[in-house]
Length: 352
Image (cartoon, rainbow, N blue to C red; front, side, top):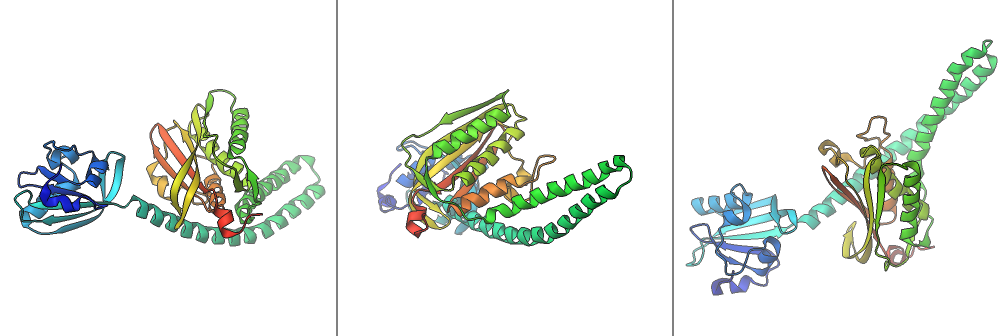
């Protein structure tokens, strides 16, 4: 949809829509066409494009009726790529072709960066808290274990040893849990590796653990170059996510391991020309809404008996590789996406 009056707006990065008195779109610049698939030379109303209950429609109507400019932040609208976050500026204008102008800018990238920084800060605070707490707990646990072992030797009735065995077993379990919480503080042992060897190792492990009712499919881009990383940490990261998916599906369902190259990716405020993307998808019930904000926090689990350490470790290991983990989840489909820059260690001079 073009109009000579607005031709100067054709080159803006923001999507621009001009709407007339009757609510019909009289102009849409190329950015609006690519975001919302607004057809050229086709008469469409704002309501037809976005729906009667859209915040864009409400803002345009309000600006038109009250003759005021309106700015909205973090609105959710739907376009060609589905749900997206935008900022909106609505301005009444005096023109023969339109009475209100809408300027729409996507802010998904800014939101992702802010969420990454918030999560990184929270994870760092959690790590320090847990590290200090774990050290404080490990010392008395050692004393309890030693006392229980001595007591077991002194008990006159061998049947009473059952109780000291319970104490020793539970102390061992807690010590193992604390060791797992402290493990992320080990720096990555960097070597050149093929990411598909990592994924195949994970696939073999989970199929051995769950021989019936589970399908693990592959969708690999075999042209992906070698990666400099810690092989064991990557195996553990992917394995923790896959195991979570399998447990959520009650050991019956489908997991897909997919690799792709991502270009011009911003990770933790650093721009990388190339990154490795690993998608781990399942057809399980999805992540409960109340867990999504705290999913990578330690000791947070939606599964009875779960420790909540698996995803925390995965996030920590990927962060140590200058990468990030994102997820998209709804009923019947969950995907965790791991992004790892292909040249991060070369750029920082940390390769070994």
